[in-house]
Length: 252
Image (cartoon, rainbow, N blue to C red; front, side):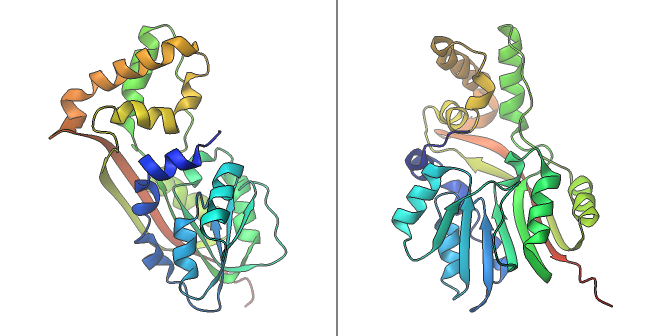
């Protein structure tokens, strides 16, 4: 996945904007070491650092990390993959917002997270939950099928039971869970669905010739106008899964 960091900040800032109150679940404290996994352009990482914690931000996108370093030079950032990162220290907490649903190899990511947490350390995350953006992906799947293309699911949007069971399997104790609908206003009042898919769903269109992509996305958008457009604004059905867990201490 290739990211346009400036377009992300300009038109899709709701991703980190909605993550602000996730920091309340994290409750960072001065002197703690905290890892922000999938930090993007670093806005939330910098907010966590304002608590006095020593924060490290990781992201697999060089463009995102370059933007984060430019805008928040006081914070440590580096390019790394969530399924294979290795750092010399363990952390008091791992924080992750809107990242883990991009990762199909969840087991590898959870293994890395568990290995980098101190015993009793907390893991605070928000990701897309079951049903997330079903409105957009359903319309896209139909439009692609009508044109003879195959829609291949990409994201990982688990149910509460599925994900909490996986966390328990990897040595976490679940302390708090919230699963909720969050209708989300999209940035562009004219082409909100088109721009959302261009930003987040370009991988679906690999089999579609370049000249046919925009007409396809416009068809998807028009099919959603009756349900997703009102008062001059486009909306999408977001469903979020938020979890606070801790690494189980093994010493008796």
